[in-house]
Length: 455
Ligand SMILES: Cc1cc2nc3c(=O)[nH]c(=O)nc-3n(C[C@H](O)[C@H](O)[C@H](O)COP(=O)(O)OP(=O)(O)OC[C@H]3O[C@@H](n4cnc5c(N)ncnc54)[C@H](O)[C@@H]3O)c2cc1C
Image (cartoon, rainbow, N blue to C red; front, top):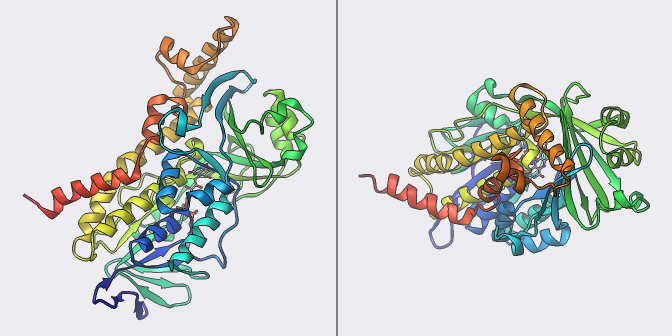
């Protein structure tokens, strides 16, 4: 490697200013950058793109994520750019309602914060502007190609090197950092499903009452059927309905990134589904599709030197069915920054601190990764899950025949079975009720008990 410019230096009062290099200006990297800068770290973010990415579309911000955004001080701006859905509504693929839940959590259930939907570019811009305002240096056209994990050094594609007390690898699901840390066995592969995304202007929906009900009152609406599911919500600021359809990979696949796709594939595939879906697909000729990727659970995030750790999608790609990938990544970025802020100066304690952080996060990440995967069982027609899905639909049909009010809580009481984790109240409590600030305090206590004062 070339010679490295070190970022560490001393402040005016002789205090050592700890430095952190963050690879990737995605939501994970920017969250970590903001919290670390707030704790007076010197922070440089290296981003391979030439400008802030404006890609993507709708993103759900569940309460566990909102809580972090409020701690960062950006929630007011996020709320101004976001939509606050009032309900989560789940239907079977033929249109009968299976689940209705108020999701104004602040008042209704004590999850402590809002459940929002926002355009990804808006939240990225808000985090980016806050990072700049605080004095984070963000370098674009800065692609990391090599890392010396023992020294905390990275090398850019230009040959330039940079060194810091700690390097965070937040470079997403195709992570170069993960590859350098763990070798090539950890490349992501197809999950077996593809997603199609449609962005339908809300002006096109107003003439039809059933379609209008998708945007007003604001809600998150989903349809589940054998093999597939559909989720949609309205983005008020963009005035578009964000629709995501998940299909088996045999029905069109784009191995890399969103690619233009043929809406006719969707019309053919969903021809037996709820007529509302059929009408929705008539309103646009524009779609994008891509393959959903997953990778083997990665058991090692940190390098033993304590100078490097993976964060966000680079450490754990999570299938999007519970809308938790970014939320969990943002939680992790926040908790790690809180721990580092308490461990000043960084140095010999770092390997233990990163170990404590990893141990504390692994279980939660694994649970959510597995629950997200289990969501496939609600619509995936293979193996065990086909019985699961079928028995669910059969039970729902029985309820409908009896003209009972279809309600999952009721089904749970009678059958002792929730069809999928997203609507299970116990899972919701664990996932949405999580408090990252409290979690950071408890990891710190545990860390100081275990490592700082060993018996
Ligand atoms: C269809 C779909 C829907 C989803 N919906 C939701 C949702 O509703 N809610 C939710 O919480 N999550 C959702 N997710 C998950 C979420 O999108 C990801 O978990 C999140 O974006 C990960 O952020 P990240 O910062 O870790 O990675 P990324 O967003 O991938 O950012 C990585 C950054 O690193 C940069 N980079 C890469 N390589 C290098 C390099 N070598 N050098 C320098 N820079 C580099 C990239 O350019 C990029 O800017 C969804 C995912 C999908 C696929």
